[in-house]
Image (cartoon, rainbow, N blue to C red; front, side, top):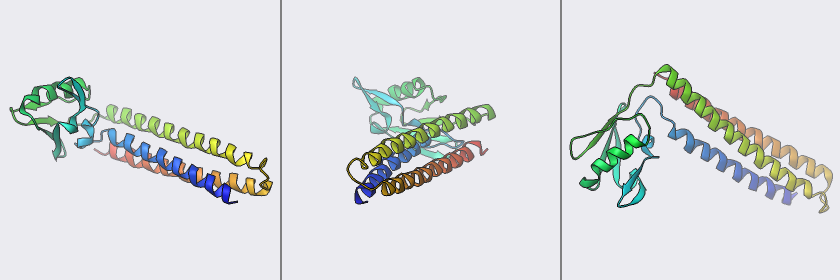
Amino acid sequence: MSEIKKILSEASVQMKKAVEHLEIELNKIRTGKASPVMLESVKVDYYGTPTPLNQVANITATDAKTLTVQAWEKNLIPVIEKAIRDANLGFNPTSDGSLIRILVPTLTEERRKELVKQAKQIGEEAKVAVRNIRRDYNEKIKKLTKAGVPEDEVKAGENEMQKQTDSFIAQIDAHLKQKEAEIMKV
């Protein structure tokens, strides 16, 4: 049964990665309060190279509704402002020549519902990834029958794989529920 345990362990690692990816994607969805993560997708034209904003500036949330961007080079301020506008995040950055301020607008009820729908879509993709991992590793377990592993051990391995899958799906649901609560909180 050690071969089955090894397969179950590999599957668990893969499923954990799917949940971690879900967490990263959910963090990108904005909630009602300002967070530097909101600007993670912004790329700045840094001397001809598209560079992530956080590699050319410090991004901080000064309060629940305001983000500030402190460029490391003053000549980048107009470029950063343009990149934030072009990123289509719904932000209108303002600059005083040395610091860029972004007022995060309050989410409308309609926009909150759209964001919840987006979060659920990301969650569904994570569930599909976990189920695909289950399928792939169940096939590996079934192939062990041909290698001489008793059928009852193979069945036990498949049952354990299903329990593992259910556990990771429950984690995904918990993350989604938490994110939905964050988004809908006014």
